[in-house]
Length: 325
Image 1 (cartoon, rainbow, N blue to C red):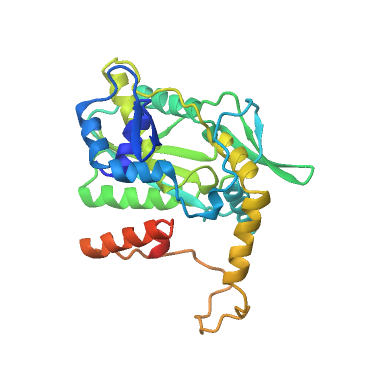
Image 2: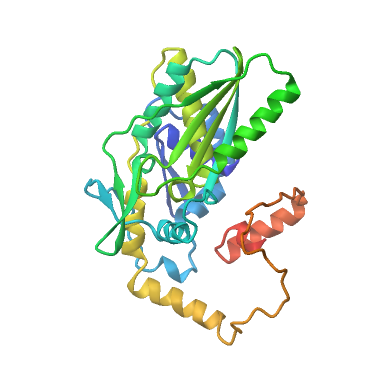
């Protein structure tokens, strides 16, 4: 397992990790620490300890406060990321350009009632999936519905050739990905199942970026498939109750990023950007008045030696490899 997979498995099993004096400490429910997870923890020990201890030289760790559950309420302050995305969405009314979309191919007989029930358990498990946004006295807040049940729409396309199925999938995925979400109304996601035959289907999952990101969607899909499989086998859910919800993080972020922490961060960037021209010096292409928001994907490989050097440099400066790239 890589580090991300280890963190997911640990979270799913309810295993607690922390670091003391450069040692990895573990508190695991009985039977949850399998041999596979134990081996993965050993293989990723140094990275886990470094992650848990946090960057020692980063001034932003000053005045650190613990992330703990807050008193439950149906109304939370948004995170700064959510506030930014809400502001961007106001500049593009009626568009779905801030959506994140995924598709999952499901092989075998699809039990739609079980799939439906499994997804609603995920919705019940994650407050962010029951969240909408509104302005209250000029300030943005996120509202969480205490309960929400949704229906997965289903469309059947039997008897099509492989080429026809591929065309239908592409057309539907493009159409669903452009779905417009009113941020004041939950849910801010949509699920659609295309059944190509009795034993083959594609599940589309469309989310507004304000409630999720690419990594989180992958985790949600893993949870959904895990619940679906265990429900089919009439086994107990493998998912433990979440101690921290996104609303807890949003409140924590606001409490932490103020005072000395905020001042140091602002001073850093003011120093870095001092003297920078407000005019972009490099000629750029002329963009159309109505952007298409179309993009392309470029795939390439990074040699292992280069990747190792990038990782070392990112650790040195307490940033992610993406920042270095």
